Length: 229
Image (cartoon, rainbow, N blue to C red):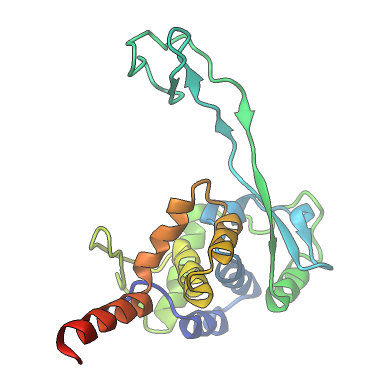
């Protein structure tokens, strides 16, 4: 099997078609359409869906705000014992509050209709997908296996390690297609950061490393300059 760094749209569509249940189709369609993190779907409730307008409110996990050293003011992680700048004891310093962020994402009509059918009998507080993280991983892996993507077939170009197809693979795929579609348009690149919920733009642009099309364009230019080929 050829080395892959991300799932193609054709492979994702095949996975949806091979999914044996409506629930499994919802899982694959939602991840591939939104690029949401695995945990974000598992936190989603029916009340977060606005299916009449094709919109989903994605809840982020709550995070404790970082500690602040009382002596020098340097920020530190919530579990940090000593300040890295002045060495002051931070064991009794309490993180200053709680931060919770959300974002709105548009979804495709196909995803909307799958969600509408699947959640039709649910109440507002019901979880859309009431499964464990491992169970969702198994759903995705089974769908990948059904179309011949069995075993560790996804290569991480940074670590050089191969992985099974899992929910984050859909996030990678969306990011790659988005960046290839928008090219060097900074505004559209920024839109991907907002869509994926990244705090830093650098995190978003790391996905450019997965785009063989861009690498090929650059290497072809260099080759032409060097050898006229």
